[in-house]
Amino acid sequence: MVPTLKASTGRGLGYAVPRMQDADRSSGLLIALPAWNEERNLAAVLDELRGAWPAARLLVVDDASTDGTAALARGLGAEVLSLPFHLGYGAAVQTGIKYALRGGYGVVVTFDADGQHDPADVGGLLAALAGGADLAVGSRALAEGSYRGSLARRWGRRLFGTVARLLTGLELTDPTSGLKALGRRAQVLYALSRFPDRYPDADALVLTQRARLTIVERPARMRPSLNRRSMHDGARGVAYAFNMLFSLVVAATGTERDLRR
Amino acid sequence: MPARQVVVFLGLSVLLLAVVVELVRRRRLRVEYSWLWIAACLTSMLLIVRYDLLVSLTGLVGAVVPTSTLFFLCTLYLALLSLHYSIRISHLTHQVKDLAQEMAILRAQLPGEAVSQQEAK
Image (tube, rainbow over all chains, first blue to last red; front, side, top):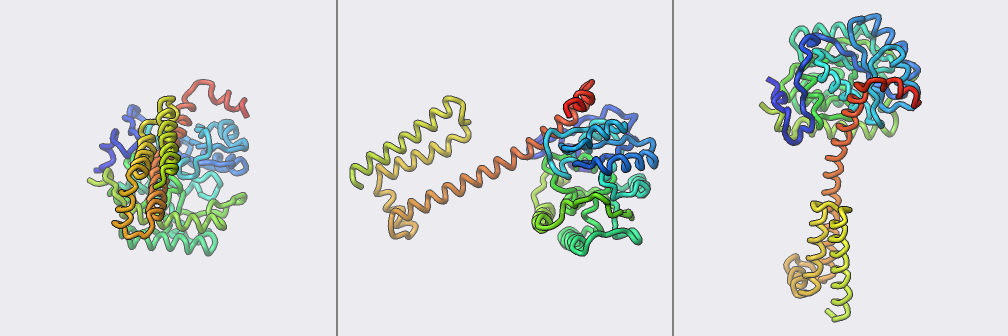
């Protein structure tokens, strides 16, 4: 049903979806953590994840960190992919998804390495996928008493959510969430070369919707992470908002030939 | 157009054309990027030799002085060239990203790579 599955060759796609050889691991779970200089938080996050999901493979995508992120993750027994130079959050996440496709993992969970997500919430996402969804998103807005970020951020999320709804009818309560679970079909879509790779955001969800994949939201508590400098603060936040809005319009109206049936 | 002007500017055009062709011959400039420059050289040569064409073009677009027509054409040409490069850069950005990701994935599969990466730090 996913039109993108046909797309192992062809222009504009740029990425050949590999054949799945490892059928045994089709039910395997990969937890991918994009990490950029997360030395201070990573050990605790990996420990927590390992405690909650002992059967999952943990993959740290080291986005050209200048601290000891990669060595630390390796020492803790996680798989590590080291990008040769900094690509940014979305592209790091995409690297993990491409890796999962190669390994034939049935489910990839994207999980921020700064400790803002709660491993317990992964369960709800996995249940949603088992229930037939292609993509499950952890939503702060659905979780009682969850940290929701500053006023500007909440307004930003509401704005993106509203624009996405107006453009495509997609109902999103937390379009900027980094906690997601992707089934195989969502993995194939997210691994496309020209898929939005700046941030996995409302534009990505709009495209997911246009590819006719089913998206569900599940509550996810977010903790204010201790040592976190957000990627969306200050003047960057303004630039981000404009980029995002434009990207949303493009996602909703663009000619995505290979997304069509 | 005074003969001196014709000689000077025709000479410059021919020189630029020669430089472009030579760059292609030395593989410093790819063929697909050269035709824009070659077209620009040939156009300027044509307008120098047939100044009346520029004058009638000026009348056609409603400009008053041929100079402003020429200026307008140059600006337009440069703007389109920049747009062309932006498109190429966007394409290259995608390719570089894909290569970097591919490299990270393949590198993780090399035996002993984890050790050597740690040593490199």
